[in-house]
Image 1 (cartoon, rainbow, N blue to C red):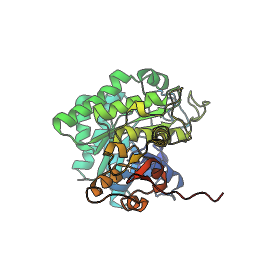
Image 2 (cartoon, rainbow, N blue to C red):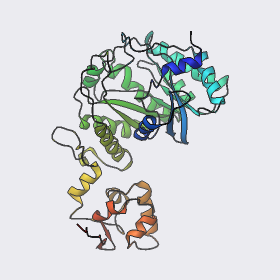
Image 3 (cartoon, rainbow, N blue to C red):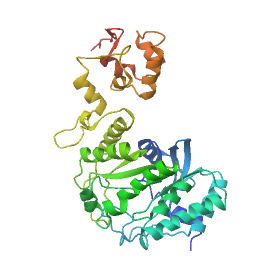
Image 4 (cartoon, rainbow, N blue to C red):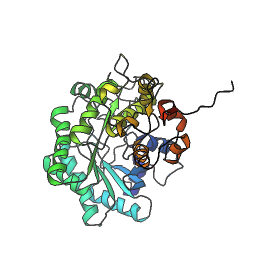
Length: 379
């Protein structure tokens, strides 16, 4: 039998399609181009306290569920089935953490003997790490479908971040993706519990979820509608989007993979909803309910709405500034603070305030009543 460290090698990059940090697109790009790691399941992840090498591990790669897209689904012979006890997982992580190879743990699992039993094993591993090994670093724990209320509470006490994947934007989409999972009974209530525990008990663990994009006809409008609700009503830190990629020996193995560009546009749009004060009605959806792939949604809105009525940088409120391509929350705040002392008249002033791509913003701005001068093309 392989020892616990060898098991990590056999896990390979088991959770490569499941981001764990704050920059999911960059996380996957880095994983694809990174030099060889000591273990394939170590990823470079952005956390609230900076980038960290993180162990992305599973208590078991065995699973009794039959999700149609998943490499760990029951009956798939190509998946090596590897299982850890809680003691093994905690000791293994402690060993490689003390060796300086990792600074954080993302711990998930396939489901065996139900979500409650599986959740107990995840919690036990985290508990041993915190109490026996006195580990105080970053932990991200998965909440299993059907986990009990007290298990969710304990996960939030032990972890810096917890996640439960809805996978489908609606109950109907989830049923088409994972017929043995129940959107309204097993999954969504756990997100409500987490919101309640954060509000009532002051538990500070952040919460995220993930959607599988494009396998069963879901639209960007559906995905962003659910994301908007999760941000505004339940306080989710972020929603992850995983562009569907077919896996052999699954019912969806012959489906067409979904464009990574669609995933990228969904992230751009979801950040506009979460951080920029946008509404769903502001999104440039096409007739089929999806976003255009060839243009940033913010730029598409600006071309439609700001070309003839540019924003005066010295008078616009913060929300209006955030409508301008290239201007994010930090730059908008810097503009508002600076113009209390002086008027902003030149593109160079914007650059000094942190606007990286001045040329992207200036077609939609007035600088003290004037459009910024633009160099004419030589061709």
